[in-house]
Length: 255
Image (tube, rainbow, N blue to C red):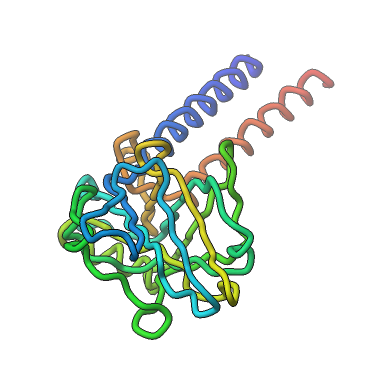
């Protein structure tokens, strides 16, 4: 009887793991729009259909010569949700040695653009570090390959600037847009270049989660707000139960 109980509990654990796996997959948001341009290209040149999004900083001051834009639609997040954690992942495919020591910055961007917007009508990028502060940064060297090389911006806590910006967009027009640019430590007398897969060739991802607990009744594959600490606690609880039952079965056999 105890052996059957152990088997049943193990099945419940596996089913719970499957549900969590589905929820994690649904919690990942793919980028809706992305583009980049070179400042010295004609004003009608835009790279919205390019296989890779490229950013480039020139000289030690990291003067922006290529800038990238990213946009996510978050209208599926329920009204009143609180964003507590965010992860934005770019799948790097190439970088030059000048980017080894450079810093990549993520900036707030306006939403009035798409991949076909003419370059002359695109919003002007910030001029870091004098006129804008990045919401998040990643320091080089940057991983880059066709099979791996994720570059990840992370933020946690409702007081974090990146979280606060995302929250205003979730509460506002439901569009989250970013600039991506080099900000500091570009090589003197050279450039820092980085490229990652665009949505046409390999999507960038944004994961959001809430800091508040969710009950199992509201935890489903379609729920975009998942509390990972609660899930970890549930796993730990089930693991303790399984181990306890197994220990009981073993002691029963010995006696």
